[in-house]
Image (cartoon, rainbow over all chains, first blue to last red):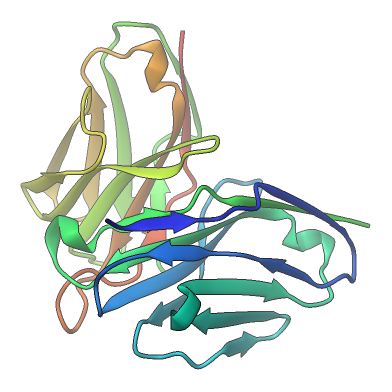
Length: 117
Length: 116
């Protein structure tokens, strides 16, 4: 079975704090893809990153960084020096390697991040 | 930039009405998707289309149907709207990956549907 768990429902931080959003996934596949999306108050999901299961290198993009660890089936997302504009709902998602319905995205429940000034 | 647009941001309908939600993408993507988003449940796939006139059921297809007559347009149809279909509906599109399967999905702004 495929499953994504984001145990943190809501997180509140003060601007400039660092914050980590957790994502744990379950899959029996050897080839799969992991994603993070951001959903600001406007509603549109914005693609942030995609990782495939063979690439465990951590990635940094500006204030954003991602830590992929297959040993613990986790794909955590850290925002450094958070800003008010980072306030949003963040979704982690998993996709199997395959076509048709097997290639669908499986989403976690989402984590609502509030960054206070 | 990928552009996925949805016909309405907010929609209010009455129980029993037939409802059409339209989605258009401008990137010539093969694959299109309809999800609904509910608090605490994340996004759940309703239907998926990988080509014109082709469709596959997702996790929660009951009460919905879809239509894809043109590559750029994917419609979600609620044949007889019910109050439990009040939700946020999100459309997405993706190209087919270079090694098969679907590649990264790009989302529209969503339609918040209220059924009274």
